[in-house]
Length: 469
Ligand SMILES: Nc1ncnc2c1ncn2[C@@H]1O[C@H](COP(=O)(O)OP(=O)(O)O)[C@@H](O)[C@H]1O
Ligand SMILES: [Mg+2]
Image (cartoon, rainbow, N blue to C red; front, top):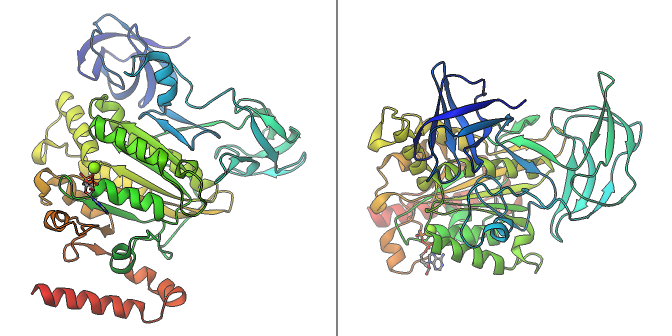
């Protein structure tokens, strides 16, 4: 029997239930008569607090909240690439089919296509010993990316039975596993993972290989490492979105996760249209073949915007676990921080600097912390690189989001209004920008470019500094 509670108070996306009805922290719940998706974000003996990922207009006290017994999770299986999701992994095309151009409330759609048959090649056989993360099958998800179907990180055992190579849906059983305690478990291609929990890895490597962005100023002067973190701060119209597009298009990342977060609807539409048309210069195929877009515009609910970053991270980590180099573009982390601020205000928490909650820094830190070049549980190596746009009011970098982001990223590409006005693109200001990866990457430049590369680069920087003095 699912646990339920009765709504006692509603404040925008925040819903209160009197008392403790047995929900768990971060449990996904269905709220009210429209069954809106929500998440438990606070538990006290006299109050259960829920954030709702959809508009709560029209909801009334007395309506019921139903627990699902599981944390808010994303569905992981073929079909993630070449797709556009909202902040909680609902595909926008399916939502549109149900409710038209505007996102209806309580729409219940599968995250991924459950009907589509995927050409599946099994890579294990009966009797094999499997470990957490072991690759069990390969599916050509798009012409660009072969999806590696993996054992979930919390399972291991012996293969009893495998399906023949052929075409399967993501929910068909393709493998029967005998767990170490002797019980049998049937597995499909699908696994779920809670968005707020980093997927486990075997080991983190120090930065040693650059993510070649294809932008000369970045690659020469302020390089980013695979598995590294970078911020692109800049005022309105200085080229944050364009820079991220360029990196998505030209960088040597295998998979791109683009999180459009809180920007205006028309800008987002433009992004979505442009992305759909972009051609991958490496293969001549559509860039979408190796891209997933997560779209959360400024008129979509703030709670889903808050969640969208974690959904994107989890998708990225999943492809990293297959052995791919994944790059996340978050545009913009400032709009995400504003969602945190709004939610915090509604929770009547003590505000810190400029009304942002005191935990802004720890949330930003936890976000960028999920980047890294990793040895995965299955022995492959993969990376998640995070590139966050920051849009400070009036281009003033002294505000809290820019300042706190600076503490956690090691590469800072500061965009400059006067350069942008002069149409000097990308408008990266060379005196305020920096990369702390230069030393880590020096051996790579030494081996792959020129032993004098770093010297020349430093000489260039010296001249630019002299010119400014
Ligand atoms: N790298 C670039 N190359 C060419 N044009 C650019 C570049 N960066 C920015 N622009 C120009 O500046 C405009 C605004 O850029 P955009 O990325 O949308 O700004 P932001 O996201 O910072 O508000 C673009 O429409 C484009 O005309
Ligand atoms: Mg923009």
